[in-house]
Length: 470
Image 1 (tube, rainbow, N blue to C red):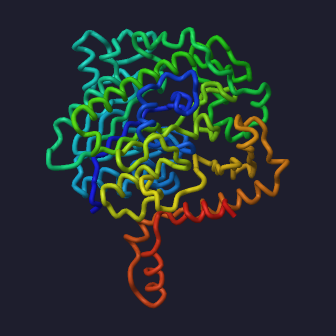
Image 2 (spheres, rainbow, N blue to C red):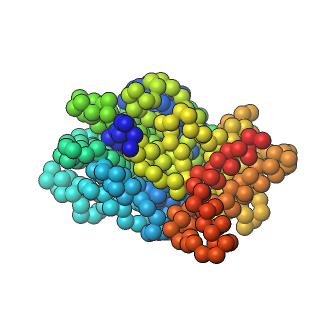
């Protein structure tokens, strides 16, 4: 065990873009609490979700593996049930595990304490939150305009429950608390004054070039739902946006994100006021971002930065340098980090300890979603759609808005990156299964067993990072 095993508090929102935090350079954002957390710890500049959609990303966090390994490559698909999960790893190391809020893990996950939200905010279901609202005369299903007072609304309720669960923890065990907030995911229902917080604010212009819809790959168009648009969406499906709807939804979205910041602030303030600051690793992140009409549509399921690239802030006094900036990180790195600081040997995880300054780190991000793959490096982003044999290439340095596909102009670049990406995809292996099912036998079996015993889940990640640097 390490000499210092911290408590761990993970706060995850749903659908928070990087520009909901002003510490990421968003001048319009209202995020004083998360900005303070970043000033007291480390902010990762090149953090990417393992998959830019809810359940696959959360299944990657739970298992510490990429989507092809845990099996949940899109929403509506269950993950494999035989992979060890984060609460199992930490619980086996003596941690008291707490789960509060939204799960969507693609299957069950056993925590010592659970207060799970039943469905989305808009769901009319019977759960503890519904009973709490009913006691105050409100219904469970939410939609704008939101009549529930800010102090009773869903995210505040979940923060209250997290505080209660931590406060009642066994005194002789460190805790892992996962506070999973459903906002700022739709419905865009900020309560009280948060609904008008951005009414007069100047928002950044949309990142949208007229006509770019016609240039998108067919698979991407299908994945983001432009073959059938949701009711109330500003995108008619024909390339024209209702700019009044766009403006209204964006203002509500940023107001809801600011409300989440206030709730995270309450939780961290309580932690600090109760003597837990020095002994707790605090992590804030999200499962994925959201387009909100950048590039002309509102969805995720895409590798544009607005959806794939995420905020990630980490504070552990005495370990993370105050005000520091990290670079590359992915969702699976959180699982590996939590295991490492808890003293858990978990070589099958496909990530790296983000608190260890001596460890080799990733230098890129790669992801698989449904039947599409992507690779981001410091200079380039490659998307590839195997069933069509097509892809896109963006120059991240000179075209940060990802407006101009360079595939036809940079064949040497995309060929090198595609080889690295497909080699990584072929290299992805369920190391846990191999190690549990490899047996001794004859000379060949013995050699295979010896090689299997040396494998780690991070091998493919390391090889990819080295390959893209060549």
